[in-house]
Amino acid sequence: MYGSSMPRTKGDHESRRRDVSEAVWRVLAAHGFGGLTLRAVAAELGATTGLLTHYFPAKRDLVAYALDLLEQRSAGRPRRAAGAGLAAVRAAMLDILPLTDEATDANRIWVSSWDVALADPALSGDHARRYAQSRDKLCDLVAEAQRLGELPAGDPVRIAAGAQAFTLGLVVQALFAPTAFPPDRQAGLLDDYLDSLAAAPATRDADEVPS
Image (tube, rainbow, N blue to C red; front, side, top):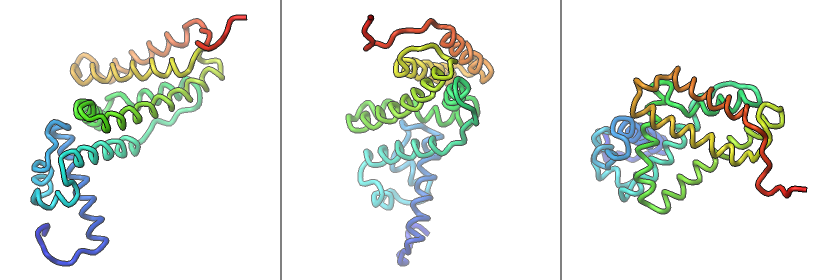
């Protein structure tokens, strides 16, 4: 099948690329980025490593592709429906937490990606961009909650950064100690965090000059 010398059509090429993507994802789900190699993907695909070099000439190309694939899969996951304001902030943070088997697998892959991304300046920059985009989305939701009076006044950028840090910290704890941090406890801790944000006194923006 994969070793055939028959001429390839565009449809064959697209089908092969989908097969490769699925094989990469299965390796990530089973072994994380630490187990992501051309040999492992080839074995999952039932092909030779030589075939894969047409897609990934080097290990770094495979890693970069896997990071993009992870981003695409994360962006394509169903999201909770929520209105505006604090409910939307809560829904966005819940969407990140490992509350289901699928979300747990995705988070395990994300966490395993940190080491390989940090080891490569270009990949690290891409990861920084991804997390910055997530903060920007949270910032917009926080600002709307402030406009509605559900969160006190303050710098929404700073609040969003704190919310992201809280969520990622909870992700790590839940991955390492799932019995200590089951889904209901994760949701409860998130609600406690949001309650503390809502009850905090209003703060002056850092660039606001006292009159």
